[in-house]
Every structure is written in structure tokens, then in C-alpha cells.
View 1 (spheres, rainbow, N blue to C red):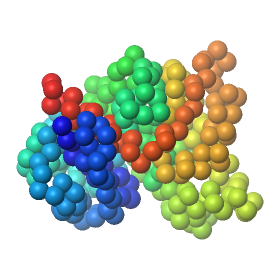
View 2 (cartoon, rainbow, N blue to C red; view 1 turned 90 degrees about the vertical axis):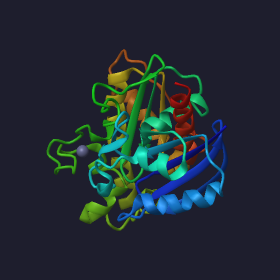
View 3 (cartoon, rainbow, N blue to C red; view 1 turned 30 degrees about the vertical axis):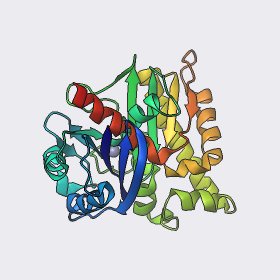
Length: 293
Ligand SMILES: [Zn+2]
């Protein structure tokens, strides 16, 4: 049973061929803003090399309509895909049934089925990168809500009402204050091209250390809100920058310890061993489940 999984991320598209959730081959290409599907199709065809997958999973960094197979809204990311039937594209291009999902939800499925939180039934996930993605699971059910928005907008919780507008319409969102996108949009932060560069600079530069401390507090504030909303046993924190987990996780854990509701359970904060595979593994599970249903 092979699954073709395509993860349209903030800066790169990751593509994998998996066998019942285990990666067989993966590749990565930069995002082509003008024709993201066309470029991904070429790379995926090279990867599957003439074989036909049995199921396909596609992840997008925004609100998706699972039934319609479309990206509803991703603010500033993949604007050319708004309203496009991505599922129909995948099924036509690769000749198998396809499922689409929000990337953070897919990552949460991946980590609670195969990964660092395997077996967890109450979990939240926060992925930090170009933006901040979140997802939540309660009693073993990944939350979707009436219109597929539940759990995934945790990066757009207001952490400063006096801060400027976010591109989502809200003000002072965690994502607009502490993400790679924030580094690129705030004039005084542009010296750090991405979060990894910021962590690197924080090792020897006082100013960068202050910025990183503030970012960790913003992520901590967003995580406190997620924990208050969903009461998880496990909080999964993911994203490429977590390669430097010792620069981030202790601060996050301390923030939860200090600032969560006095009687609330402090979740175990965990980091995936392979954060680059969380979404692809989750997509394989989702695609297979849809096929069985
Ligand atoms: Zn926002």
C-alpha cells in the first residue's frame, strides 16, 4: 500500500512516497508562487517514477474544505490556490483517490499515530516556522468544528492588543509578532533572515537574545491559550527551528509552569524526532483512512 503525500509548506513543498505510513522516498522543492501545482506535479512524477500510488494526501497551510477539496483561505500564502479544487488536481494528476488537510492537523495525526506522541488521545500541536500552525485533539478526535476552522488558528490568538494588524484581520497575533514572517516584516528584525539565524545569533549577540526571549514568550502565551482551550496531556512543538530545542523548549515549559491556570494540568512538552516527516506521515494515515471509508 503506497501513499503519495504532498506538503505545501510556507517556503518549500515536501513530497513523499510512503508505504503504510513509512517513508520510502522523499524530495523537497522551493515553492513556485505562480504555479505551485504544476511545479509540484513535475517533482512528484519524478519521485513516483511511473508507479501509481494507491492513495494521495495533500496538505496546505491554511483553512481547507475537506469535502469540497479546496483551500478556503491562507492569507498571503498560496493566494493563487484560493478556491482551486486541489483534490481534483491530485486525483487527475496521479490517478488515485486524494484527501486534503490543513498541514498542522496532518502533523498532529502523524505524531499521535506514528510519532513522538503515539497513542496520545488529548494533544495539541504548535508548529513554528514561516507562520505558526496549530491543531488540537480531544478524546482521540482531531477537532474540525462547523466549518473546518477549529483548533488551527492558535497562531492568530492576540498576544498584544496594541501591536499592529496581522494579515488575517486580527491585531497583535502571535504569528505576526514571532515567526519567520515577523522577522521579514518588522524593519528592526530584518537582520535575521529566518528563525534558525535568530537562534544562531542569540548564542553570541545580546540584541538577538532579547528578540529570541520575546519570541519564546509569545509562543508560550499562544501555547497557554491552546492548553486552556483543549486541556491536552501532551503539547507537541514542531518546526525546523526546534532542531535547537534547548534554546526554546525550556523557556516554553517555564512559561506554561508560571502562567497557566493554577489548577490546570501542565502538559508534557515534546518535540518530534523527525519534524520534517510529521505532515507526510499524517497525510498517509488520513489518505488511507479516507480510502477505507
Ligand atoms: Zn492573525
